[in-house]
Image 1 (tube, rainbow, N blue to C red):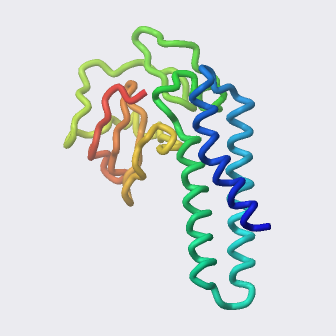
Image 2 (tube, rainbow, N blue to C red):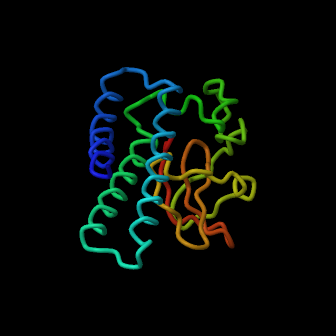
Length: 180
């Protein structure tokens, strides 16, 4: 039974990117189904771990299957993240619900709305983030393809850029210009 489950998971993991790339618009319903599938895969993996540890000994074969299942779940999670090649991937995300297109003189912070641009500010390492920008945290850095911020740092939205800032001082550690 378990072998059949693993085979079905493998087919789903390999086939889902192919079907997503074959269709020009990956709509909301499909994205919800993909998220549901990943949640179910995670639930199945957790149950398999519990079953493997039930007798107190995890054999090498069981460990190998668990590792394979974990890798498949991680791959499924990676596929759900933001893909710059898909221009409509931001649609349906709650932080983009108030976006109405670009406006001259303003920038959009997903989840925070439109804000006037600060004239003459250079976003570069070693500079400081103005206090007015320090509260616009990026809620899901993985969605934008950003790495996890180190301890004591946060990614913030700034004039259409991503800025990695030290939370205590506002010192800029990294900048990704025109990130979104």
